[in-house]
Length: 425
Image 1: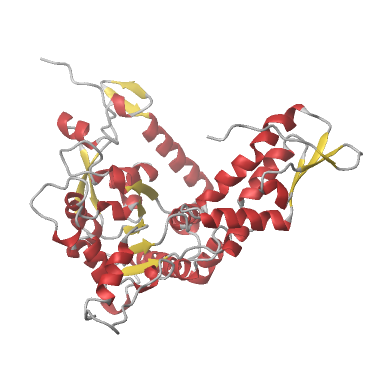
Image 2: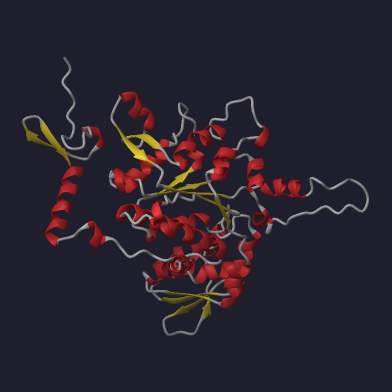
């Protein structure tokens, strides 16, 4: 008879799922996670802490948006809509945990669909919310999801990640938030009319998400590999997803064709017939549910995501503000890097505008800003740390165009100093 593999006597996790399994005698074991949980409970008890005393005051939508404003430039509509959704999510949790249900009314969650061009701040909104909230928060990439039984991640991996962020606490995870990026990549390959073949990363995943997003009890295998866990027969955690808020984001590139087709479907052919055409910069303001369905999302899934909001293309002015205003602005990051070598990095106002123009010309939105700065400063990042005489590096508009920056050495007057020319590939 095979000897049973040792497992934690408290949480039943086997040795291969924990860092340390300590034997306590008489065939009992305790894992490092249960030890940490016990230590935390003892410390909280010694300090007289209770869940009520540790709970932070409920943040109002204006306060949530103000926090988003510190990190994200523009996108007022998206930030407002997300702030309201987050506030309502916390109110629902407060009503359930404190039993303050209004006149017996059960408030249901409102999942969010966040659309917008690439590089306009959708993912940054998710990162910022994660900094703000004290609830479990998991960011997933929809491109990795596949239908059960195929190579890739099953949809249950979303809940596995959320549970991991909650340190295995199922009750906390059931009030968490899941952010699904690249949501548009799950669209049916040929739009609404596609049928007759197996779309394992498109419609198949959408069907698998239905119950989870609407709310239901889902068996979540322990560990981050659902197929291996399921095959080995290890235990699962039952999670109720009715209180988990889902925020789905995607660029929906090409949806302007669906919008233009809808706006002109009643137009007649012939002279004098003026067809409407929505510009790419305005298309996301015109999107309705029918356009999302035509793009390739199934009606059952769209119906479970009632809030639709958008981020809009950034202007040159927005690009300059992104470079300088947010708490972790790119220019502040590079200035900090140079300051570590005792060098002051400066940017002329005209130089910042030139960088903004360059970024605006590229299709990747605000993501282009870091690439432009990396390319601009790479030569100085290579030479300056080895030259203790350099005190100031000033980036001018001409430097953005390919000329040399102005370098100040010690007490000497500013002189033009050639940068190392690196091959651009």
